[in-house]
Amino acid sequence: MSMPPDISLMPGQMLARGVCRHLASHGFSVVEEFTPERGKRVDVMALGPKGDIWVVECKSSRADFLSDGKWQGYLDWCDRYFWAVDQAFPTDLLPEGTGLIIADAYDAEILRMAPETRLAGARRNALIRRFAIHAARRLQMMRDPDFVLASY
Image 1: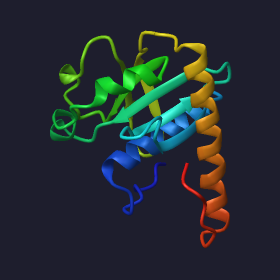
Image 2: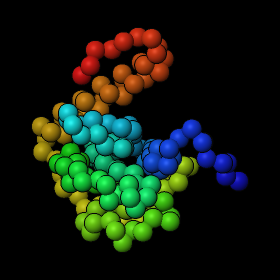
Image 3: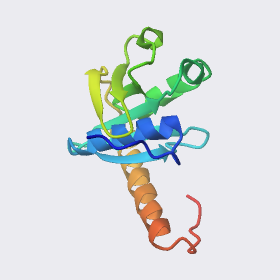
Image 4: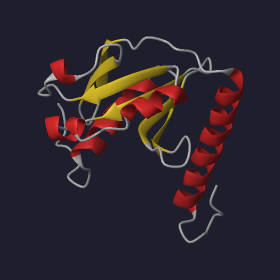
């Protein structure tokens, strides 16, 4: 029996939660709202058990997708790029050559695997370090919300 969605989450955040749960069940470590470089913020970045880096952009509506003009800039920051949408989303809008995940607030399913474009080693290493720092700082802020961390 499924539970009602958490009403404190926005639709895109509910999609991200389902995506994160799904990827975590396959051994990925996941971070929501990750900044690979200044001016870019991806909805979900996932680090796979073998060092694969995936980016997942969550789109809750046609308007949300059509207003996103910067998604191609994320392709240089991952090995595979996916869209995550709900079952009602018109998937024919999504560009060819990208992955497709159908999600809800509790789980997800990869319907189309994204093509792989391997990152250069130096970029991969820098991203993995940034991912680790981001995840550790987010955990610290959860455990001690009054502690102020230097920006990175």
